[in-house]
Image (cartoon, rainbow, N blue to C red; front, side, top):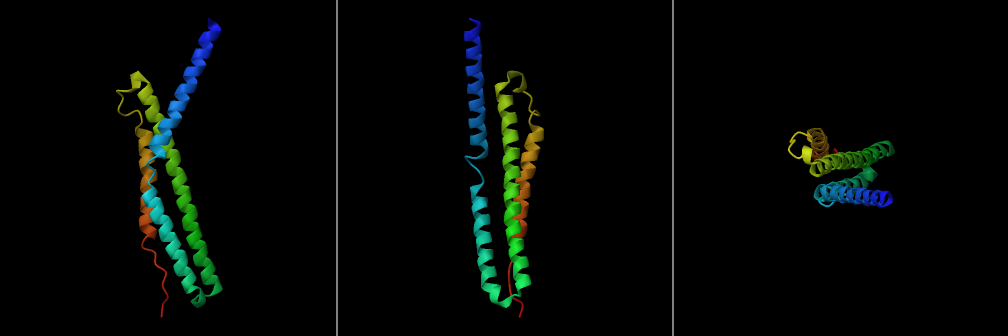
Length: 141
């Protein structure tokens, strides 16, 4: 009987872990802000093409600096996406624990900290994109 109870308990833990994983997937990756991500990638591709068009009019040093800056923007974007994903996973985990724990279901402030971190991570992405969206490469006469 003890062995059966232990097996039953292990199966329950595995099921809850699987539910948590699915909950995180649904909350953080099913409806990921792909429209903004796609817009960023399109924007950066356009800037790389513009830079390529200006190549003949730029010194090697200026071209390399601009190319480095554009690549740095992509790297920073990826970093912001990773931060958003981690913050979302932490917040989704908190929400899952709250949903599965009857004594926490009425505590509306239980996930405020992780919710704030997640909101900040999304705001950083939007602010960064809106800042670089105004970036134009142009040749001075």
